[in-house]
Image (cartoon, rainbow, N blue to C red; front, side):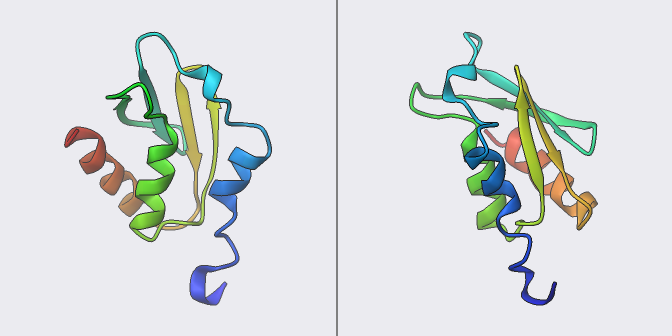
Length: 98
């Protein structure tokens, strides 16, 4: 997988396969984020137009493309086999800085 392009569709594929539904936004406007089953933090939706896809944008902006994800109620699950520790750390910083 040189260049990292092979896995670049995994994060997007979850959205395109119907796993993302904007109607899953809950009244309390937050999602619990998990990476490989480990709780990383909570994503609070700060405006009515914001949704959990901002997590994808953050990860892609920071060079993380090799992951699968799905939403189950208020749980946003990310599965990765590459750079798990780095990805968790980056997400913790992102989630705690908001």
